Length: 127
Image (tube, rainbow, N blue to C red; front, side, top):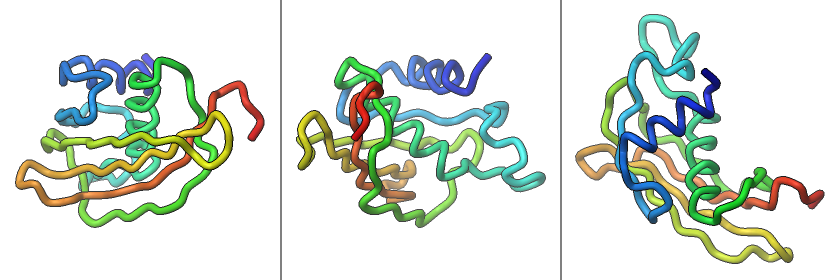
């Protein structure tokens, strides 16, 4: 099973695909935790970005690639089985056929865990 299959199965468990927000927890068996860090696993930032991209793809109905990063802030750790809510707002980007994603993860107390403002383009484009 690839990490993308694992991410999709986590979203499927959340049951809120393609909406502005989805709540889920990442099980301790998720391969993204391996090596980050033994004895104290936390979800790597790059995996969080992958979750954002995957939700944006579902919302837009097309494969995307990361075309730019405007801002990323990691404020707290995401640990195994911790409930988080990923909120996503998509808008038109400055360049044609791009989208700006304003996304954040919050814990079950409503405290922001991380936030990012990312630019996505269609996977086949060369922006």
